[in-house]
Amino acid sequence: MTKRLKIIFAGTPEFAAASLNAVLSTEHEVVAVYTQPDRPAGRGRKLTPSPVKQLALEHQIEVCQPTSLRDPDAQQQLAAFDADLMIVVAYGLILPQVVLDTPRLGCINVHASLLPRWRGAAPIHRALLAGDTETGITIMQMDAGLDTGAMLSIARCPILADDTSGLLHDRLAALGAQTLVQALEPLSEGTLDGTPQDDSLACYAAKLEKQEGKLDWRQPAESLERQVRGLNPWPVAYTEVNGQTLRVWGARTKAGADDQPPGTVVAHDADGVVVATGRDRLVLTLLQLPGGKPTPVSALLNAHRERFAIGTQLG
Image 1 (cartoon, one colour):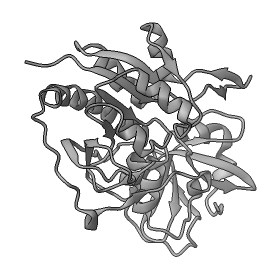
Image 2 (cartoon, rainbow, N blue to C red):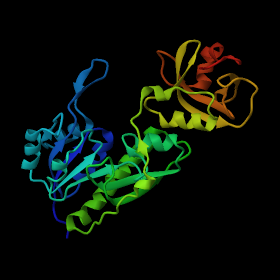
Image 3 (cartoon, rainbow, N blue to C red):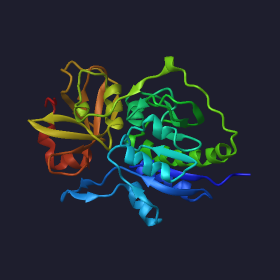
Image 4 (cartoon, rainbow, N blue to C red):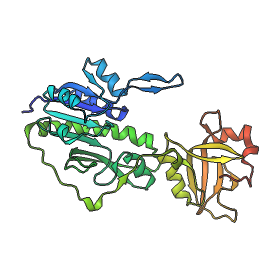
């Protein structure tokens, strides 16, 4: 029989809110929610609570927003909740060993990759950028390392040919919530055993930087297309045309060789602007001009065909 757990939930973005919502649908009790301090957002830069905080407040759950968990007072406050388990999902703060040891069953993490592949901050994006065909969710017993703890449960998810980071994020958020809830029963009964990770297979999913969006047309079209999908919806791939930034939201590869330098517009086809690359061609299908919105290229060409004249150099 499942034992009712007293749970502290720690998370911040929408990905984490999906897991919190799933836990709230179970018989377990969420005694406190930990989340990042409110951040400025929107044009007015108004302080905005995280998605996890908003959900917690809707359910009248106590919310804690320490700037660090290394502070003894913050550690005492956490211990006072007398929780059986702490669930951590994209929280954003490092948990020192004293916090990891505080709940009776320790701390578990919902991680959006098939560990030990893609440990770190941006596993969804890195899987797409690398051309992986499969990813998934790992429920992990946390230790002091970076995503190095024993694996408690794994759920696999195919990466589809047209997946963006946004689409894959949403599927993995739902899969993570489902996998987490399924793990709680055997965890509460003490029947969920961990499997050590093979550190020799580990790779690091570094945090994304805006400059990674810059398209290098010398690369193969296949790599550039993965870059477009992997950086959608943030930070978004981009290039320049006539000194202006052109954000690329959608693209597809097209076989073919050109005698033009990489980055040269070589044609317009039914779907978009065809650009020479280091190997094959990239067809730009969804673009955003400065001050505009993402627009299908078929519509953009009606008003801005001169910007994409054959022979135009993108860079």
